[in-house]
Length: 410
Image: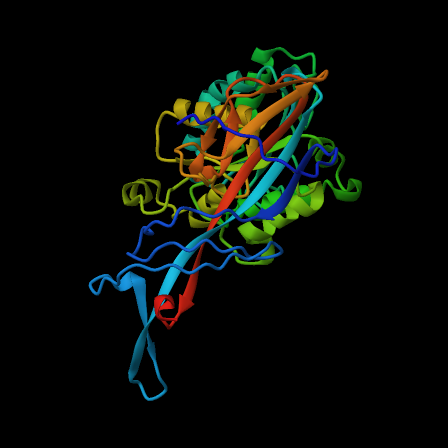
């Protein structure tokens, strides 16, 4: 569903940062109509720092609809008179700024593949190497970097502990990062990736992809490891792809999805664009669990959900569509904006309260986009030209107000 905003939200305080969220709490009165879950009438009320408008309204009670009343129970266990309630909405005006200073070919994307190198992964590594061109085709006109680490965080010879694997080749000097700016051809890059994503099957059976990513970021700090420092660029979209037939096997802070997300934000800034994609045994896929003989990827798929990444089954025998979808998501990451909420339709006219305005050389124009409600995100329909982009939208929060006495009897 493609939705275009219908009005401009006024009185925003805009700062000249690359991406900045500002919020101004606002309250608007709704028509007094029944709510979705009861026969009670909605009551518009202002909260926070705005002026209150606590006009109470009610309708006839529906004795068969329990959602409109709650019973209060006294200390003796006896039930007192029902508590009536009304619902209302609080609206918040929001604005986000996006400054595009480079054309698409200069947009930075860093891709980190975190591959399971345990004994059961030879076939999956082969599927990935074969399908990689489907992803690669989607990012050719971006300023990309590609690196590989493994899920082995042990102290053994096979343990990478977040270090970037070297791309070994008989024709190319050893390097740790493939780059769009190198002199290698597309075919050479694809061949190097295909050979080296086959990371072997001698790694630890205690897979820890989340910790491996954590360690990889740690080694980029304070120049602990030069390839890692070079790989994680400040002004880039960070895209991480986890491929494993086992879930995260340990439970320390470094193995926690939320801690990793906080680590990325604290290291690279709150406005860092990043997604984590997972190819694993999807939760509740019993057939895949039986054939892959691994474990459900509960933690790693939760990480994909938390970062709005993609989730795919490791049990597929053809990964072309899986890698193509990840490639499209990566491309979309450089022309998307994450929102703080679902968009409101505050006056109930059937149009959502959102617009995107581009300003360049003194000229303003409205920009088309696709709104992804489930991701709380907009994706621009075309590649963005240089300019300043402002996204104005309205958030909606449903509230409930309890009262015991019928306001009409007061």
